[in-house]
Length: 149
Image (cartoon, one colour):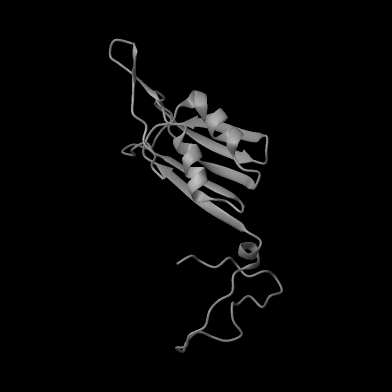
């Protein structure tokens, strides 16, 4: 179950006009934010991303309804994690930081916006997977790419 958004100032601060120390059935209406299509979506993936395609295959293809995105990114061949923040269409910051000891690399993003589709956003992220893999001899070998939607 999803937690309710905090009450708006002046609304009385409660979801109902009465206390909840008795049993009865009633439905809570959607919050104003939910009615307007606002939501947040968490994306997680357990595979590295290709740093050279992340901008063109994820950032440049985000839908207009995305207002903010932030999280931790794992790029292939990079020993450190990237702390990612997007605010608006052009305000992007990325900082490198060490993975905490004992932490397995993983991509974790939260996207906030309006009328978001989790499947489409996850597909955009999955499109950033490396399509080739370096061999021990320094060449490149094809790698099968699967969708993790």
